[in-house]
Length: 552
Image (cartoon, one colour):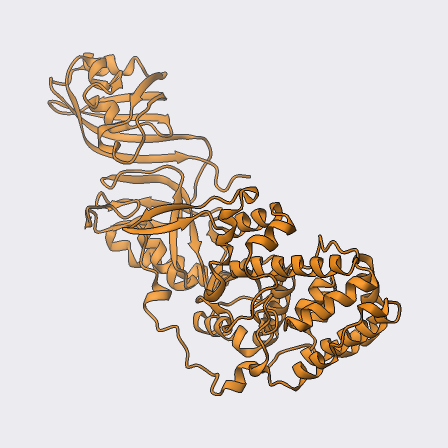
């Protein structure tokens, strides 16, 4: 059962919005040295572009995308500029770069291909950012990746959750409409080139996500002081959407060659369409010829859009932390405590559990969403755990404080042992090696215990094998199966009347209670079978778990 997500439900995580004016959201966070880098790297940029496109194609790409009101960063993508640092320059600097590229390539271009698009540069540069036409190939996601509006939801969440981390990774999901619009622009540019009898393939171009993630990551890093890395234990996931174009891919269902099938299913009383994942849409677009696309797609070139992107609340998650070590084992001296919360039909059948006694203290230290105990085997709530203890470790899920000091962990250990002394629960003991368990059981049998009965049991002292079907008491959580288990030794001692004690060492996973009473014939042989009468268990203790911990 999922425990209470303390750090998401007990606190108001929303901070007062800092964006007070419309102009504030367009403020940019960028590297100051990028403009100089563009000047110094101009020749390298030209080489990158020339590797993929000839001068005529480059000119047509620039003119077509400027006329379609695409942002400068998307134009660089279509020109195959792979130096991602260049994308963090201002729109003004990038437009000047594109203008210079266009002037240089036109020097060697057929004059018939020259179009009058100079007005596009001045028109865009004269606009305020909020008045600029929305880019049809990124919905302004790339254009705004380094603005306060784009990073603010993430920055706000980082402050609210107060993760104690030094670096982060990004996972982003972009609107599906971007796939269709980008492909539509590619097809339209190829058509323009074909009309002018200019070779153009555009088989490769820089993916939007490849430029958006670093630009967004660098901007978040500069605002927060964290380091953006490709791999980090702390991950920020954010999903973007664009309602205006979210159904633009539906025309693919009418093109047989696309092999784009969607299914209508019913989920929680509502009909939803499935099959339109990003990979499915991308694969379908690649299968459609340009001729079919131009015929069936009503938005080629892409239509202008009225709205920019929107985002869902970001999800901040740290990788699971495992708490364990040489001294991690527990003893349980009470018969009223379960190993994990024992809840059936919403009713708690044990007052507390080993997992809760340890986990709630660790939750406060690590400030985590949840925790799990991972023990070396289990015992029932009415079974004590004695001897050297049972080895275990704890899974700490989504910790805000992932690496507390050793002193803090020691303080928690002492606090747990001190607080739960009244429950006869002692935590943090030492474990041993082997894969067996030693038990002590108090047994009642239906006939008087005699020396002959004891001898009948003890003749199996050197061990034997039993077969156990899944016990009736655990059928609701364990799959039906027949398990062969080894009892390594058994030793009986006589008590008064119909009582005796058993000391036995068994293979891990042996159901001791069922071995004694037979579980209606589901365990063969049982203790009752061995002495020819009914037997039942009154008390059971785990004396020792023989297991090296941690594994060397």
